[in-house]
Length: 138
Image (cartoon, rainbow, N blue to C red; front, top):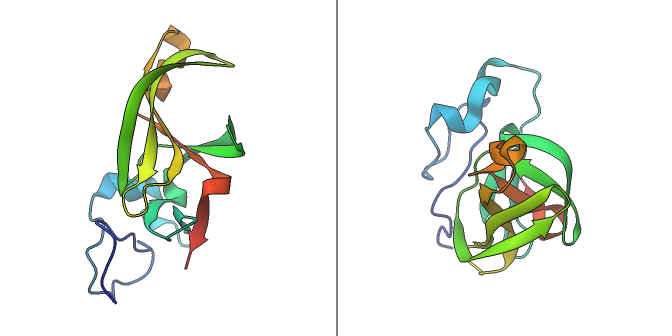
């Protein structure tokens, strides 16, 4: 069976024992690298299990997407950006694009590109992953 991930996310708290390409970017795993009791979870596409992000990238769990609960993420991988469009949301108007799993092309959330409100600009460049479209990978 071939590797279907462009980037494979490994637990930074365990010793690397895999021959897969892993993320070596220290910003990807942020400050959690040194904490021993932190739970590390890899999130993937619900349909094909392609790795998308990790629990260390969650900015907030208090978001709502089109399908229900969603996470605001700092960084995601293995996605393709869809068409750019203007969307009206509860907190204002945004320029966004859907993000699709690069393997199966299913929608997993969206990316904030631009906000019309100054107090919401912290979302620019961040991602929403909808929980109904993702799963925990083991």
